[in-house]
Length: 463
Image 1: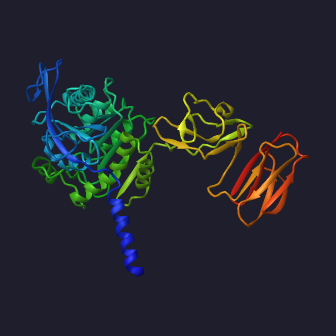
Image 2: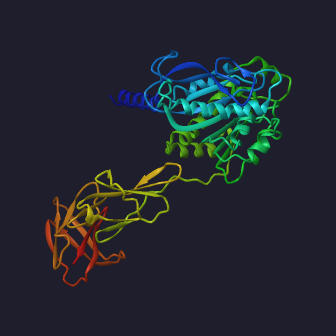
Image 3: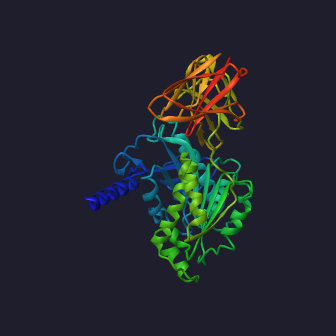
């Protein structure tokens, strides 16, 4: 029976792993935006000025064209295509990320043999603004569907234009991703110096279309050092393998040289393995995925990673107490909680628990990335006096506060060795106790004391 049981457990674990992220159907629609300040573009029907036709893919209630958007709110990613490539070369991108809960928007402008890079970069900015406007338009299918985060991503020419967009002083992207980004005219390298959003650049070592030393690396290096940025060099990777097979791109790569040593599907897997947790952290606020990403960046044998970011999620805060006052030392945003519920307005470094009475108090700290950590609970009893509990109560102390003596009551028949500690953690006395025992404390000065045994600590106050 043991072998089938192990097999069943393995199957359950695999099912659990395979469904760890919500999966949505893919809906699609075509939207033409316009920029009244410019002319040209691609498409029609967006109004006066420059036409910016976009193919949009999104989490949907069912697969299809113009089907309802799924319940929930989602990040928006505006994606710039490569030179002489159309949006449909990136089916691998939208088929992967729309089911994971992202809205992907592909502008179709500048797809000819003479693209204007400055216009394409501006299009990416305008489209992001227009999508955000739809989120507050009650007549739009995307009304109330945006989670407030927008990223810009692009490949090759679109990757360079991504940096033109992110470096635009009118843009406000939350994340920037370049897939083999190409130098552009005007210069993507120059624009990268103005980028302030977290940045991730992917490169293939065998890219002979946009050689990394001439394109990807200078763009990455130009992003200011204060920006949290990472560089992923895929060993044996190609230029065109960030997309699906495309005649124009594949032909250009075939005559450019390079010694590609991995398959396209393998390169897709590498990109998704790293990009998934990075986007999840940056655009969805899933803080645990930051550790997943940084671990892969430093240990994945398929890549060589660079990381200038020293960010670490918040450590678990530690509550200090002085009678009925709890305090925490931190420079992060603070929220005090009672019995699991936030206490309105209690965001200072200290809390007077006598205001709220007995209960289980915790404090939550949150950093600028929205990542939080919550302290262990401090249970306050007897007029706001704290007792530190473990998951399993094995002894108790009362009354609390006390003047002359306290009673130690063990909840089972075990014999415990219990030490009396002062507020500095110094052991004053140790006793072996069974059942219920009275401990005289008349000799103690007024203050906070602790009774401690292996794995458990309780606090009482001598009045």
